Length: 120
Image (tube, rainbow, N blue to C red; front, top):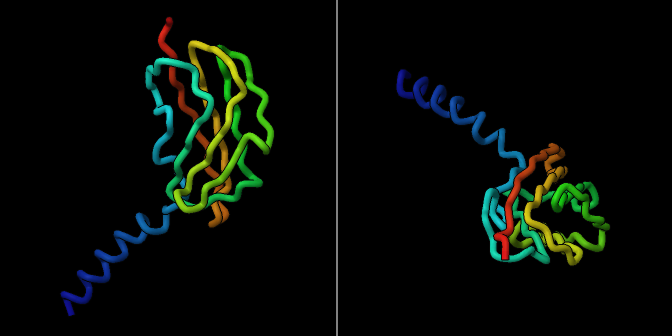
């Protein structure tokens, strides 16, 4: 009986880890806090879970100026759980990316990251 109780309590302790499997950003390209050689023409944001593309909000600030993005700039690749964000041609020295999504499980997530471009 004690073994069964131990197993029960251990499995319950792991439950919050499983239940909290909401979508979160796994990585990006360019990576957060990176110093890259030239302004990107595309961002890649890879998530842990599938998301609802129609509820994606991306704001990209290039040297404190907001870049205009439309739904045509954003593509969802379901196989890799990746958002591709095509950026308008723009030369900047610093970028801030703010994102918010709705996961297929109904939970919203948001975050931000920055990266910089080397001076020529």
